[in-house]
Image (cartoon, rainbow over all chains, first blue to last red; front, side):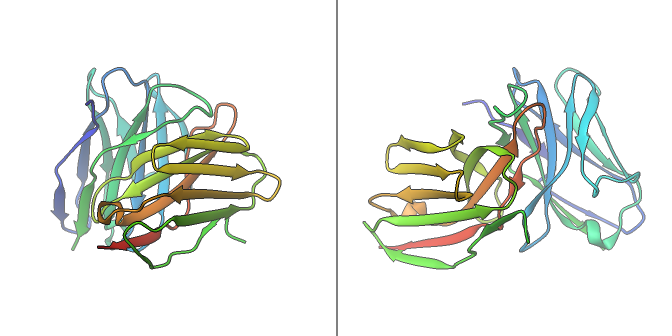
Length: 115
Length: 112
């Protein structure tokens, strides 16, 4: 069964360092997303991406964050200068269709720990 | 008022029980409603997806949406220990909007 894969599963980084979280969405999907979940809190939307550009982003997704689809398979989230409060599970998701028919499938997540 | 509210539980039931999980929401523009299951430290897994008001059944799972009351439910029949997880409701607007707005999740334990 097709699935969204994320690497690494756990990333520890020092405050102020840059991190890149990687995702391989399901191959025939066109829409890609990043969500995050701080321990014990809700899953929160960060950004959606379609046709090589950002289509929506939340207030959380500030200038420290960027996304890229560097090739035909990978989708990355970069955090330029990590802060302690960036520690969270980061989930990549993808969906086949647009608009409200948004059956998004999630990866297993990357646990980011900023020390 | 929070956009999506969900009782966090924890909810503990005996095996075989019928489980009822619920969410309320404040934004009447939400049109698409999902239920996800999340095991500890794993990604959310899509269980059910419904559009607008009505019921949808899939095996032991039934999703209900009542847009007039801004209330959605997930029923699990003949619950099993393997159903023990956190259940997240999520919803999205119509049109080109794609972001999911999640509830906080209900932690369910089914006791053998």
